[in-house]
Length: 410
Length: 101
Image (tube, rainbow over all chains, first blue to last red; front, side, top):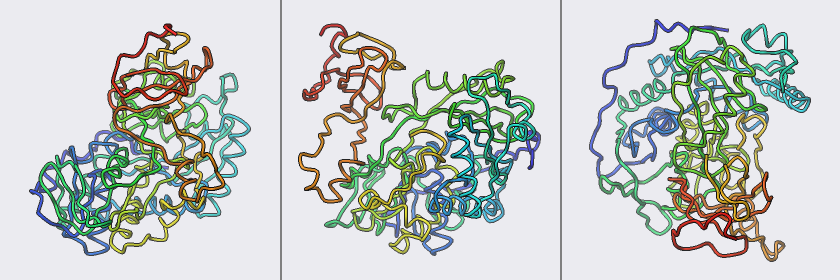
């Protein structure tokens, strides 16, 4: 387990990494959404499929949505074969991407612990460890004393409301610097000839019958042969413009950071049951994620009681956090599905493709979302990794229920 | 934290309530007549409106009664509270006084 908390060796802020071109009148493909997934998709379209006459349209600034708001946790310890395959592929890509993109985004494989607090948790966690091992995902079960050894600041005594009864542990999991990930992809996209167009909001689609042929934006109309939607919380809004529905509900999801502290937290700790997940960023902030707000919301903020519950859980698990101060809190809009699994595939509109439904866990999936979505857009058919994650599964009933492993209640 | 005017109990904190999702989704009259697509629509597809949204809430730790609410999903402003079984108001009228019923 690496413990590269060294805040003295952060990279300098970079110079300009990409051009800011005017949109052309036509592209071979247009990706809507300039977050991590949109940029990764454009990168793999250019690199794996030779499609370089493409554009990424971003209504705000690059990677300013959920890519700027997540808690940067990367892991692949999902229960079902389909999920393990796509998330483990993502993890393998995370391991090689810094070199491939020639950009160190500080991927730190410091491990992720998922705590168990009830007998039900223990059984479910052990089952998941077994399933992970069968799928080639590194996973182990830790007893409370082993939990304490790996993360000494965790309170594993049995006199708290929900004692720690053990944990699953994935050593290869960890965190990365999310902004740097976006910049790494953006820089490579730009080098490969992709146009990244910020402040470009999609206002409608041009269709010829049931085939999409263009995109209307606040910066003019762009003709295109193919459209890929990668807009997370706003996927339903875009789908409605295009004339179809998605089985998505958008919810606020909140997170917060403390002020900077000396390194105290060597790994990543997540708890489904008391609902908090905590790591310490490279700079030293404690980064904590909450649960989703129950109501639908597009406001990029949630209710305070959600944060209060999350903090109560964090302080019980980590007594030394009691005197840490909150520096700031924020919210993103997550696109949740009924089975807590993403949708990557074709849509009822010809030549329009959708990557959405990653809900509360999209960051870790970024490289695999990009790889499989690019394949789907380029070839018109899904990659074997995203084939199970089709929109059609809600009709066939072949759902992939990952509520247990998704770590945040949907 | 939302301040929700329960039609029976008056204004209370959001933590006393549970969310019930989109309002006015009727159970299919003849479920056996539905094809897979239609059944999927009923089970898994709900509106995901950006703007005024009709939704159900239940006052779990109060009167335990369900009611409907029209709420803006961007500003989170509650525009109307109205009883189960009645139509969603079309205006953005003032929410009724909590204990007026």
